[in-house]
Amino acid sequence: MPFQSSTREVKIIQEARDSFTFEEWLDVLMNTVGLNHERYSLRQKLVFLTRLIPLVECNVNLMEFGPKQRGKTYLYRNSSYYTRIFAGGNISPATLFYNIARKSLGELALKDAVVMDEISKVKFSNPDEMVGKLADYMESGHYERGPKRAVSTCSLMLMGNIKVEAEENGYVPAEEFTYVLPDDVGRKDPAKLIDRIYGVVPGWELPKISMSTYHLSRGYGIASDYFCEVMHEMRKLSYGHVIDQEVELTGDYTIRDEKSVRRITEGLLKLLAPSGSVSRSEIKAIMDIAVEYRNRVNEWLHILSPGEFSKKKLSFSLK
Image (cartoon, rainbow, N blue to C red):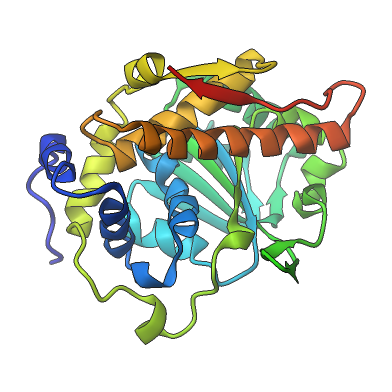
């Protein structure tokens, strides 16, 4: 029988964080999820660890695009058993929301995070119902199917494989994101779903995981079973007061923009500053990521529908 953690005490990890510098803590987390921190730059570590946000923050909707073999599925399979991964294939309303015949809840009501890998290969058995209910759930955290009305805190991570090309400063996408979406979404009203995405993770910046002796962890990290339980418990915590104390959002924010940036920031604070104590340089690094991810969504929306979504740039200032 596999070893299982006997404690979910978040205080242990909060106290431990104070014994490390910011960069040392990033290294600990990279080793915890099974990767060699020496093979990643500071920027790449931050990008990689944002993948964990759906595991620590409720009702976060993220999307990641990148080439294959960047560790996307590997991370969710090995970090938490509170996830459900759909690797392409058919997804029905009964599986995701509620099975009317069996009177049983779907995965959204049972898991911390639902991951749709290879999103371009996902097929919805009832596209009109699925896309509508999914968009409504992403907005409100509520859904209805048949006689069942449900509220869930499950987060969503949608992941797609894209082609990239090399430039002087690294790799960049070689195709437009919309073409990676399922036909059921791309043919209808993609902007409706995309606007409910909080941020786009630039998976194309991450290195390919190849040799185990080169990329897999050889250092010390947090026991994976304990880390899984702590991430689950962290979903109950709020770090909004840290944002209110340290940051002022500037720019043409909509309600969705503000909610997106705050939720991504809270998720990163839980991971990188679990004690709630954060320096100006650390909060700036976290906010840079959160605002960048939402700006990427707004740029995508402007390309899709320039008349409805004007070109804008969100920003922030430290108090």
